[in-house]
View 1: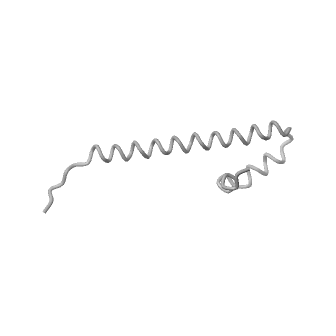
View 2: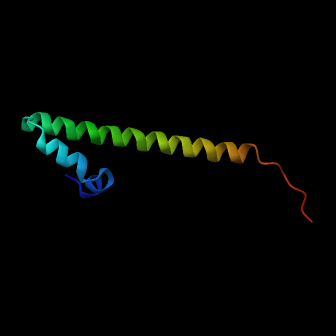
View 3: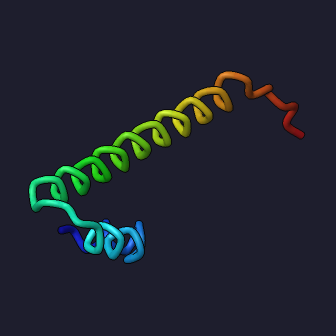
Length: 66
């Protein structure tokens, strides 16, 4: 498992997954679901930031320079 991912979500979630009675296959599915959810959130955040940047560029008013 990626160490950055563990740091990002904290050890509490991983401790909970390890204490729950799951088969190894179900545990891997849960970890993969968390990775997929993280990737989706990262993409959405990137898209929102790009839209904000585009909006700021499109609606800039030219100022009078002294």
